Length: 568
Ligand SMILES: *[C@@H]1O[C@H](CO)[C@@H](O)[C@H](O)[C@H]1NC(C)=O
Ligand SMILES: *[C@@H]1O[C@H](CO)[C@@H](O)[C@H](O)[C@H]1NC(C)=O
Ligand SMILES: *[C@@H]1O[C@H](CO)[C@@H](O)[C@H](O)[C@H]1NC(C)=O
Image (tube, protein in one colour):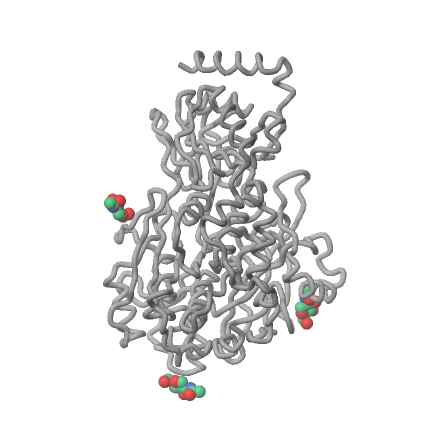
């Protein structure tokens, strides 16, 4: 089988161009197999890959301009979010792109099996042997320290003429080690916080609602509003309703029936037996702050186990892409979505990161606020060595927190004063440049650093986090017991919950939801509680300090619902 296909593909290539070999452009090359993975063997020739081809979106630049306009409070188009059809129109590839790439596939005997609603993604099922010729690469089976196996390549190339038509092809060099940003168990106590001192030790919904001043607000637009919470990895799905009710009994006895639903994406699961910390924490806190606003939990699958003797197509394991494409295909979207997942930016191929980030821009243009945890590694985990070229030390930011079209949330602790949590991740992207909404603010901070950490961070990079919220010792209900949990994972659904209440307020006044938040946040920094104490560490350094104004530990600060409400 393999040889037959190879022959066909080769003869087509050579007839198209006698110099086929030299006409490829390298799209991505890994300098080494990502940490945690080892090569097991070459992939079986007839193993099927679910190939995803990301076509160039014809008017992506225009979409980003529109996003900037509809999210800028001083622009006449503020709040005039696009519909699905309007976004699709901007991102639909040109006919030339669509046709030439489809011809290329057909020329290799490959049929398109599906496409995204805007036609900017083509899906095809391709045997390894064929994919190797199309992409001028080798596919191997790799094993992760966790025991799971995947089929990937360490580089891939495309014919040069495709440079102007294709952004990326997956699965190739992205190993997809997506993980929750690491909610951490803390020692358990029996204290049930009631006052400031105790809230400083253990955080409950009552503490947060008081500190961030949402306790007096009664949502009024719950028929129009909702909040989304994403979950990945299958092992962190939803809390059972019993646990949710136990949590509510403890913390919101006024809440009779929290409106909560689950949507399964890309083979995601809703398995209460395998329910994990992240899913429970995110949903419990988002629910309790926004009650009675409907909550939707998106459980996204990925990492389908590879079985060596099977020709069944492996799941592409591109969870962000699968999730975002699922969302973009919907007509109606929740105005706020909270995500507590991410991975070290340098482990995500740049073309992949850019494409995912542009997809987030599309959700933003449609009026969705995306909040992502900034990460729990301070300025970086471990030795912080770069993974390409000559290894050198560099602060290690987290993606997707570094995407300029999302709002990234760091963490604090203590009530009076609120202080930066030492793990709160922050810094500067090495992939994305600073957007104009934050340039001035960041320049001020960078100047104050002087030559400190010169060469360890990218001064012109998208700086994060944007904001922060409490992140230490959240009391959640896990397996029927109260358990304290720490991380920016906890801070994110909290900040998202406050934004959801602000949207409720806007919707109840007949206004549009806030949409992409950052231009509004940076233009109104004084509506947030500026955090000026504490620092984050990492990479063998003291890290950055929280300071007056923005800093790469707590961003602009933590929410003050009352002040923010005056600015919506
Ligand atoms: C907070 O509550 C605890 C226990 O209820 C009490 O011992 C403590 O004195 C209180 N602190 C303040 C500042 O009210
Ligand atoms: C749910 O998770 C449990 C524990 O991991 C596992 O034993 C069980 O097979 C799973 N059920 C389904 C339907 O996947
Ligand atoms: C943080 O503050 C400490 C104490 O004031 C100071 O020594 C250190 O240089 C500061 N670090 C940065 C990165 O500004």
